[in-house]
Amino acid sequence: MQQCMHCGMCLPTCPTYVETLQERSSPRGRIALMRAVADGRLDVTRAFADEMYFCLGCLACQTACPAGVNYAELIETARAEVERRNVLGSPQRNLLRSLLLQRLFTSRRRLHLLGRILRLYQKSGLERAVRALGLMRLAPRKLRELEPLAPRMSARFTHEAFASDYTATNPVRPAYRVGLLVGCVADISFAHVNADTIEVLQANGCEVVLPQAQECCGSLHGHNGDVHTARRLARINLDAFDVDGLDAILVNGGGCGSHIKHYDHLLSGDADYEERARTWSRKALDIHQWLEQIQVRPPRGSLATADGPLRVTYHESCHLKHGQGVSSAPRKLLAMIPGIELVELTEADWCCGSAGIYNITQPEMSAKLLQRKMGHIAGTGAAVIAMGNPGCTVQIEHGLRQCGLAARVEHPVSLLAAAYRAEA
Image (cartoon, rainbow, N blue to C red; front, top):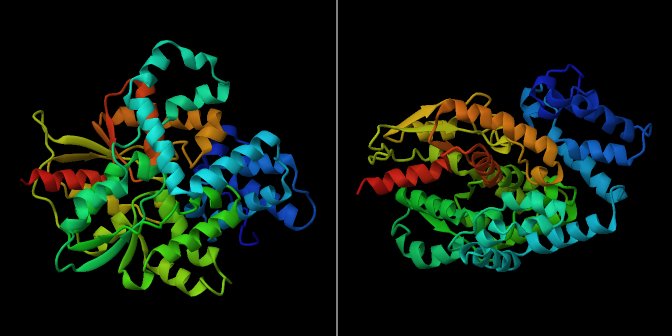
């Protein structure tokens, strides 16, 4: 906290400050509040807690900071203290956190069960009937607000597709051996992105390993003050992956990648896991980083349409750019695909308002940020918005439906996989 010079360089990069112009809702203001708590001049009150959770955690301030303040660690520590003091506690909130953080998002088996139920609801026509009859009007307000954000469930989850389609297609003499973290929501809603990632890796000489015992990376828990569960999930994943036998541990989601790269910090002082966590963090890479590192093979297939090049713009996931420092690699990947016209997006690195579960906990501010983002997207005239994070995908797909835009969202790796398939 003492590294913060209160210079104000962070202010114009902070979405909540720009919207409210309230000093307390800026990174500088929040650090001042944290400092007051640390110095014993302020107690951990509900007002303090509300401000810590009003922060998006987008980390744009961290990129802008000339003093190198580790804001990610500060905000997560502050939220952990809020939860330890239980100043936001209520029977409803405590029950929801217990069901979601401690039970649902700690078990891929339970996530798969929920995914199958939702898939049946969506595919059977029941969802259409509920919407057509206006039955959601009878649901509680919170549920009515959340329902349009529900992502589509994948026809097959990642391991189902991998077991039947991809195990046999690993290279006979691989140049690299890599592990893939399949995620939680990504596993049940964006399994096609995981499948495309596997396909691209195998096309570039990588043997892909998907340990069955892996679980959620723990980013959802770490960002929301549940450090104990985040550490437990990190240990499970360290046990699941043969860390020493892999050249890299890869992830295709910006938020997950930002979290797993800091397993070494999360498990610092843990005698049983500290050394392995350091090795893990050294090998953990975003998929774009890895493809750039191994000099990915440019595709020969074109994605041009009958009307000309496919117009694509790129939205930067906050945790991919600001949390991991990965910005140029996705653009380079998109630029190498034949038949794509890459159009720069105004404020490409401005938060879309998803921010993990921010669009659930802070719907009003989230909606303002989404509206700002969609205005810039509409201005590009792009047919495809490329991005590397499932949370952003859910949020911007919701924005496209609201605005009536016909564009679609794709992961850059999915576009590369499509170009490889177009070679045939």
